[in-house]
Image (cartoon, rainbow, N blue to C red):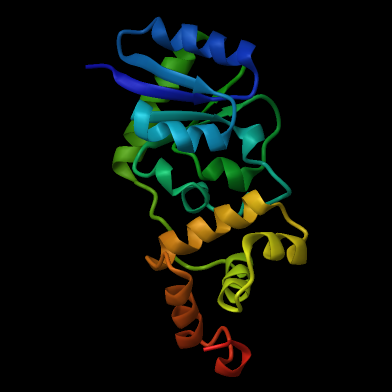
Length: 199
């Protein structure tokens, strides 16, 4: 049975070219091509890929490559994640992938690298870091103080989508979905003072 591959690349031309190369193999079938990470997260449950090939341009946002891609996108677990590299790329970001393919690789090189990435994943699976980042801590405190997503976005000068993504990460790491539960979590971990919230 062939492994299912999802391609996440903003360029339709690159996406279709890579799809054609991968589908030319007996070992792999392209489950779909999507243009961005949001579409990837939405389509993973439907496409059920074994391997996700992601254009590294989509992850190199604002120098935040130190945030694990598995923490930022928990839906990627337990899949093999391969970076598609078109040029220079941050070393720290590159280390997070199970393997990489280059935009200029030929068909045999790409297929060989996909196989190697799958083996790397089997030998040394990435562990999800459940530690809350500084930004997530900041957002958790604001959530616990009763602020809405929009108010938090305005306060921190970030998009509402970024706030929502951080809140998903916080819920994933803590296992808590409700605002009340997150407030208790923040209190118990001394992130906020009991007097600073309305009980």
